Length: 243
Image 1 (cartoon, one colour):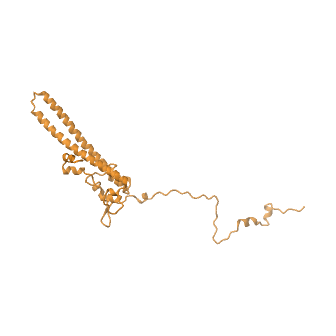
Image 2 (tube, rainbow, N blue to C red):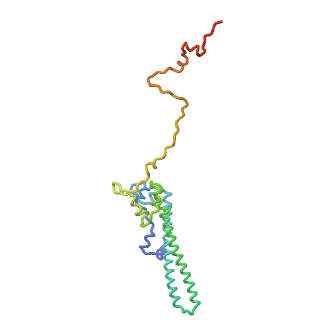
Image 3 (cartoon, rainbow, N blue to C red):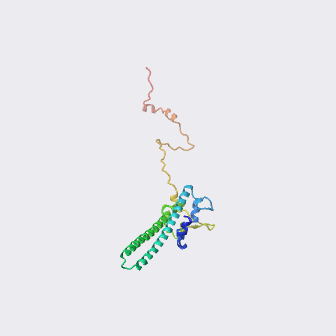
């Protein structure tokens, strides 16, 4: 907005403060920042997240100024309705044509007043969706180690203050030894561990017997080569006869 816009679309401070861009809460900045004391909220984000944050902030500012302009237009349009009705009352009843023309002007002003009021309503919904919807709050909650249920519950909390999360963040904060409030991780231990892949045991086609450590076993060749004398006839090993 330029100076001309700020001059004509100036609203009361108690109303315009709700149109300001909410600042990010400090515990949320600490989650995204790599330094212990972050200096700027945007510096804590990655380059692609920083571009998304700037785009959402600009969209918020544009919608806020659309609300200011529509509110001013609606105010002056409804003021003109009072002037037109007062003008209609001063016209003599015999002047039918003048009454018809004033009635058309009143209908046009009423339509303009309702339209500008709807612009304010729809722009307010756009601001709310940018903050509490799938946009700015969830962008900052990406660095919070919690499940989708807790993230969505915190992101969809009502907007009551000039902070991005405000009082909705207080029940989740814990205090450290240095009296500093942080947002803890809400992952369970069982959920944080990655499941181990199933490993099949190696296939052993032959049975390997167990032998004591100091017990000597005869070799395979010694067992097969040594044949008892009584086994010669059972195995068919007869001495050859001389002819």
